[in-house]
Amino acid sequence: MRGDPPATELDWLAYDAVLFDLDGVITPTAAVHERAWAELFAGHGYTDGDYLTHIDGKPRYDGVAAFLASREIELPWGDPDDGPEAETVCGLGNRKNRLFNEILDREPLAPYEGTVAVLDLLDVQGVAQAIVSSSRNAHRVLAAAGMATRFPVIVDGARAAEEGLRGKPDPHMFERAADLLEVERDRAIVVEDAVAGVQAGVAGAFGYVLGIDRGGNRQALTDAGATLVVDDLADTLPAVRR
Image 1: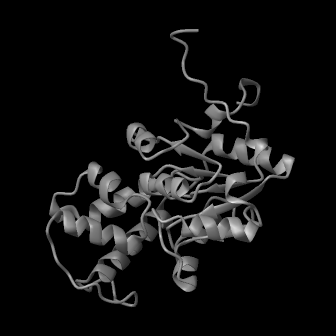
Image 2 (image 1 turned 90 degrees about the horizontal axis):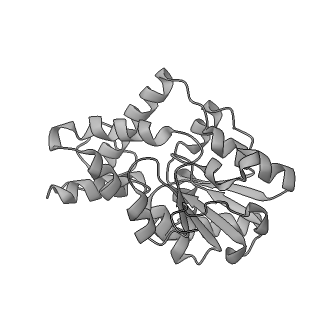
């Protein structure tokens, strides 16, 4: 009927696999990342909008470079082994990682309840699952959330560096996860809260790209090509399962 809200239920079982981003999808660590970035760039007029526009979903060093470019700041790229005190792109990225881990050490972490409900459904029905995250801290975050052994395939920033995988918005990391799960692209769902991740899912021609709006990003996710955007994964389940 006219005036009814748009349908948000998703037939998860119509697909063979689901490829989940981590921060902001499985766990509320996107907020921890935002706080670490804000502290890192506090002297450069950093805003919440900067996170969504320049950083969200990208590999860490790419996020540093994009933010610096937005402020017309030029620094040498450096090396991933640079210390956090180094005034290089890699040094700043490593400083941000130290700040992130300091916050994570201080505060408890629990996964989103709606996400857990979807994961439980997929487990019962035997739908394959993977984590695809630009973060190099994926294993540590999952362990902190009590989910260290839940996902048989984890393609994170560390694995991407080891295997030479291109980061989001390139679909390479999602494609690698699908290959590891031995599923076709059009038989897999991509779940993302970042524009770069949605763009990667679309570019890889995956069967369904689900966006999650955790705070004012709905239109940008839609514009990036998300098949559907919801506030929480619980919204995709029939009312009886919520």
